[in-house]
Amino acid sequence: GEDVEQSLFLSVREGDSSVINCTYTDSSSTYLYWYKQEPGAGLQLLTYIFSNMDMKQDQRLTVLLNKKDKHLSLRIADTQTGDSAIYFCAESIRSSNTGKLIFGQGTTLQVKP
Amino acid sequence: EAQVTQNPRYLITVTGKKLTVTCSQNMNHEYMSWYRQDPGLGLRQIYYSMNVEVTDKGDVPEGYKVSRKEKRNFPLILESPSPNQTSLYFCASRTGSNTEAFFGQGTRLTVV
Image (cartoon, rainbow over all chains, first blue to last red; front, side, top):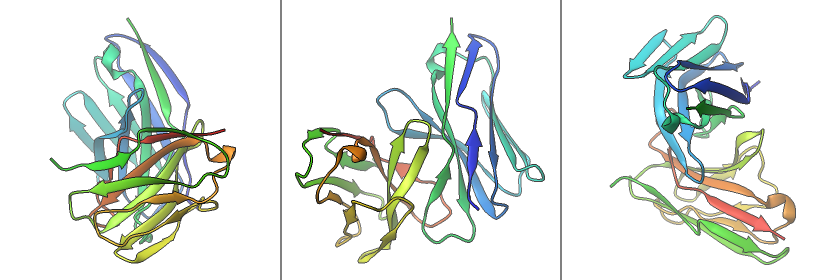
């Protein structure tokens, strides 16, 4: 089945690292994505990782993929108040021709000054 | 600039009054989708289209219609809106079934 799970809330202090976790069930995922949604705004693609990769780093963002455990994480180094938002992980299924992304429920990141 | 444009951004309507939310993309993408976002549920696909005149149901299609007469446009139609369709709606487009999805800014719909 297709299911993506995330914890709903994370609170960190400014300057700390944030780690947002995600688990998925479909082993035929091809791409896994992290999207950011700021209040009142649309979805912004932050980063993505191919299913045959273990890690991807992009400036303050590090994505780790554990295919065996079907676990994806997003680490934000030196978290800033501007990082406060909802973060969605999403997967794209190899067997699907619908163009559908399967989204998690979203993790609200609160950054305290 | 590559973008997906939805209109309107905000809409308050009454039960039963037909409405259309428009979506247009300028990237010549084949795939387009509509999602609804509800608290604690993430985004769920309503309908999708793989190309002109090719549309199909997603996970939550009840109460919605779509059309794809041109590649760039993919309107979402609510023939008889009900309060349970109060939600935040997103249109998305992709070049293929496994590529980056570009999202519109969202349409916040309230049905009273």
